[in-house]
Amino acid sequence: MRDRAPDEWDCVVFMAVVEAGTRQRAVRLLADRYDEHITVEGVRSILLKINRWLGRPALREGVGPRGKAELTVRGRRFQRFCERVRSLYQEERGRLAESDVTRLVCLPHHATIVKTLYVETLAQYPPGEEKVGIEELQQSDRGTESFFDQAFWPLTTGTYHLAIGQPPPAEFREELQSDLLYESQLEVLVPAEYPGDAMPLAEFVRSVSHVPPKDSRARLLLEERIAANRVDDPGEERRVASATYEIGSVIERVALLHECGLASPLVLAPSDIALIYKPGMRFGGAGVEHSKWVPLHHETERLTLEVHVTTANPRPNHLRPIVALLKKICADQPRLRGEVTSIHHHDDIEPPRPVHALDPV
Image (cartoon, rainbow, N blue to C red; front, side, top):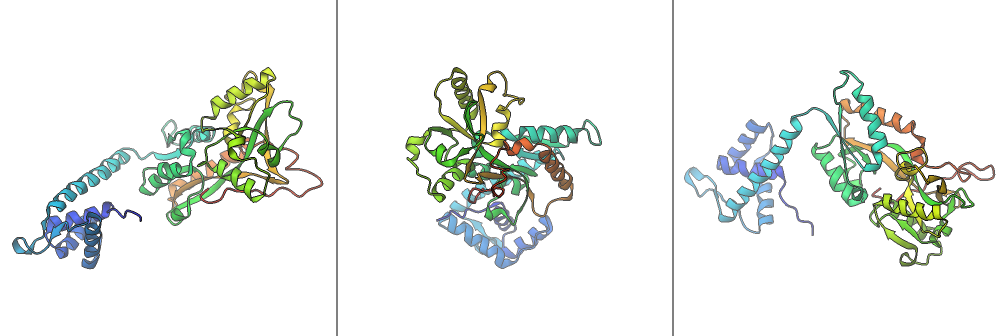
């Protein structure tokens, strides 16, 4: 069963009752101090919630002088808890209030996007003044649960103003608004002499590969399509060489095997993550000519993942130009979407329809 712990507002109401002495006076205090209007019954409901969470009453109401409530032993401990909660929120709000710079959170492979955003906004009026602060998460935060905790939840509390990554899960779709920036596709690192310009899913499954961990969207999509298309699967224990977010070191080892002409596992990655390891990019240097990236597909279907920019809902007006600029930046970087091959443009078949990971994506 979910632990329905008191939130910040519950703590504020509780402390108001302690300070004012009665529920009725607490209602007036909250209206005067916070411009928040709550009924006596609303206060009662919050106190009941707190008591249920504590397992015993936090207050003895009507027993003190002039009918004021008194704290129980457990209530005094909970009061200290409330003070810590309030202090943490106030410290965070104070830190955020020190700067009016818009804060954006993203993953490491979005660096090419946010670098362009940062430079272009820096040139805007007043020139040279920072307009967007960038918070880059860890590679491990690509997992669905970690991105929820590190990006979407702080977005709802105002810690961040924009997030680049997966679309928000269903439970946040009333609080958050997201727009599609681009679709990445799953790609496979193979030797340069690989005969095709795309790899069928059935062939991939028969090979040994380095893949992302099970909580990543790319891995969820891969396993879902293997099952949905009833691909003959020898089992993960036979086809997975490793499951890691540290793709850089894996690519370096496999690319060296390609250069030496030795047998090697495959490497699977979304195209936006693979991008910086391609020719002409930051890590696409010496030896890159011995390897190439090819799209993974099943028949005419590409395996794609949506990448969104997400803000509060409704979207504040000052964020709209930034969202528009992000869309333009991504439109100007077609390589984020991956290698274009004959599975995308073939005279004899219809254009492939994208296949997306199941929610949450």
